[in-house]
Image 1 (cartoon, rainbow, N blue to C red):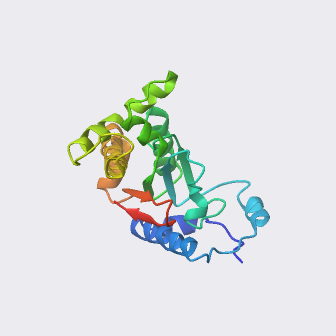
Image 2: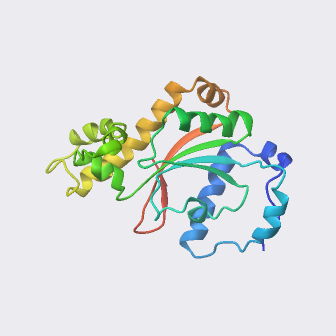
Length: 209
């Protein structure tokens, strides 16, 4: 049973490469139903006065993507930022910068997922209240996908949606580097990595893209 949490010394010893490997190993345990047992109350007490997460994950709000569970992580392991469609904005960028520059995380993972409702809505041009403005952040990925597929360019075309999901992850990473000199410099210096992945609802697997 896991009782201890990440300390400052543990965090300092990590590299971006081994943090990513650790998350993917955790995802493998999740797929194989071998998640580690955890004493959560012991971890609550240990993290009462501080936290030293190894990574920050930008995920969709989708209830089928429980981020800590799919990577077999626990209390104090990862920061998680969530917004429908897993794109960046000023508040998300500030959260990512805090996670890495201030709190010492080694990895930024932008995590899209199969059959994303926000991406499907962008594919269909949904126009509804504040959702319209939100979907405008995803639309560039949809426009690229429209040039990459044949057939219908709406959510009925799975290939179209799948390509838009991957494009959205990759464009989000591009914009993070462009809009955050702090994170760009940290990545250039080898202090962090910024990577993208897609979680597959059908299998539970995370694939780096």
